[in-house]
Figure 1 (cartoon, rainbow, N blue to C red):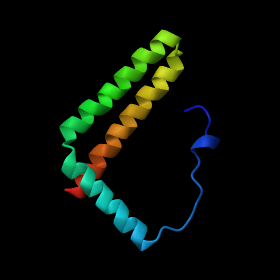
Figure 2: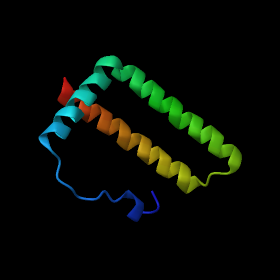
Figure 3: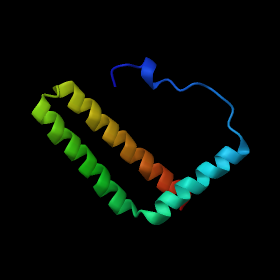
Figure 4: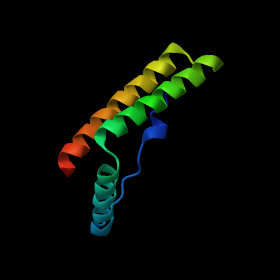
Length: 85
């Protein structure tokens, strides 16, 4: 993504309650959405974005950035799924 400043996350302490809630949210997500469906839906979102941006003239670098984002999100989903099972 182009603006690295926009992607910076402020550093702060995370409470045990926040970690517990996050774990429950992740567990809920993967219990209610099969990995196969998550992958399919994520691809449909990427495909839809590509189609809509193609009409308005997205640059090749924007499409490449979005594909990289898609790939990294898929890797994250894989890793979280492995950790939660």
